[in-house]
Length: 170
Image (cartoon, rainbow, N blue to C red; front, side, top):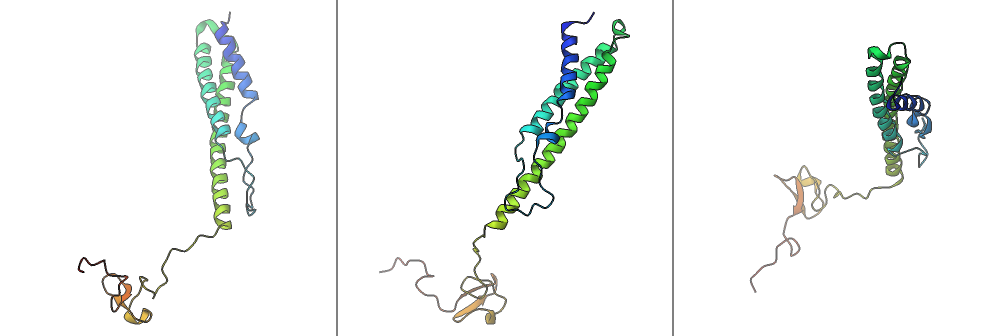
């Protein structure tokens, strides 16, 4: 005679086997040619996380069913069959969770790539040869600038008031 706990585990194993793989079935994946400005894909961890939680629950159920099937009192019952069904379901759910996490990461990368492709970044670099810009020789600096040897930057030949710190002398 089966206990209530064993019957509920069998029921849970059967239910999870029929409702598995949320990440494979329900997630919107990145299109192969994700050139559109905004790829329409799932960027949340909800479905892979649900698959992972269900994989853990199904795995625990499979362990309990295998334990019950190895009990000599339960020989000839369907525990072993349900135990292997629960094991296969746990493996399928784990694969689905992994696949969903990979697809989620691909989606986030595609969205970041499309955002960076549509926005232009302002350049904060100082043009070479101008004041504070990079140089190699004095000839590569503009006008009244020369190339400072240790730093390889263009600096003024004669310092003006802007470059000197304020003086404390009157």
